[in-house]
Amino acid sequence: MRILVVIYEFPPIGGGGGRAAYDVCKALAARGHEIIVLTAHMGELPFEEMRDGIGIVRIPSLRKESFRATFTVMLAYVLSGLWAGLRLIRLYRPEVIHAHFAVPSGALAWMLSIITGTPYILTAHLGDVPGGVPEKTGKWFRWLLPFTHPIWKRARRIAAVSEYTRHLALRHYPVDISVIPNGADVELLAPAELKINQPPLLVFAGRFVPQKNPLAIVDILSQIKDLDWRCAMLGDGPLLEDVKREIEKNEMTDRFDLPGWVTPEDVLDWFSKSDILFMPSLSEGLPVTGVQALAKGLALVVSDIGGFVDLVDESKNGFLIETHDSAKFEEALRILILNPEYLLECRKKSLQKAQEFDIVRIADRYENMFQDISGDTHET
Image 1: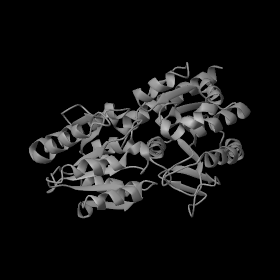
Image 2: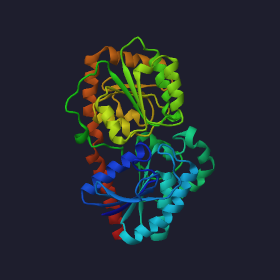
Image 3: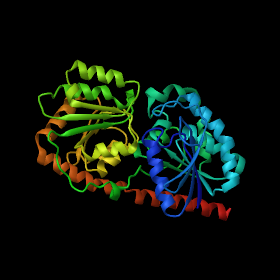
Image 4: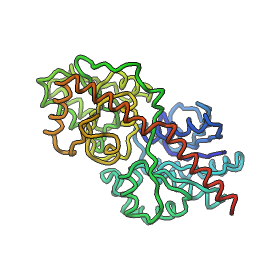
């Protein structure tokens, strides 16, 4: 099939949602589908390229930061993408459009579908669902919400990346929504062996924004300075300098690695030499970093929220903790750090859990969805 993917942030721009889309595109391209991605340009990136069998077209969008897109940037992507999308539809005649993120990509898919009649499916991530990330998008949805209903209503199929995301979406949109989680190439990522580091290495990967709660990591770890551990915090964002100051204030500079914004490949390299994924986030859809951590055999100590619930079997491959319960986070970390045999067993369980999120299974479900739409179109 010929599939036009519209997504406003795609690696190396953006976070986990873009990486999830990339993995799906790569898996479908390997099966012989013709994939064209329409995404945002930034910096010195090429405007057009072919990577892993995926045709990537980048359009001007005023974007200047990898880790953040303002409302103006999103609007610029939609306006610029309308003309570019019409050109690509005319040239390639895709059988279906796949939009990742209802806002803003879904708006673009909706307009392209209205004009050309091309059907689209919608993949909803947490941030583009009302109530998903209220500290970030709450003020937008106060006035934007009425305009989003046509996007969800016209979509021929809708997938949410977690049951939690689906639940939130159904509060506002009376439509059929399936759950298709983010995936990873489990076979490719699987470690050759599992070995506990001395000292154990904790890792955080994400944007340094309130949603990810990076300052809590420093606070919690400051309470277990009596234990032997190290921590790597991967990413960039407005709270990075605050994190650095808190680390210095608690005299833990020699225990932390803060490499800044890193490539997806660098994240996987860090996961390969880590033991525990530690993320006390305030909200999450189904974080790709969590799925990749499973595939790399990391134990998880994460907030009991959103898609994290789908990744953890309590006390088997890690712990789910109430977001603001610092004492419970400290207790869970103490248990794992002080019991290397138990930590190793948790890591083995994560490898088993990862099979549920194998990209092969995820690609199968999207492929079936595309084929169903194609069949509907032919019948019509």
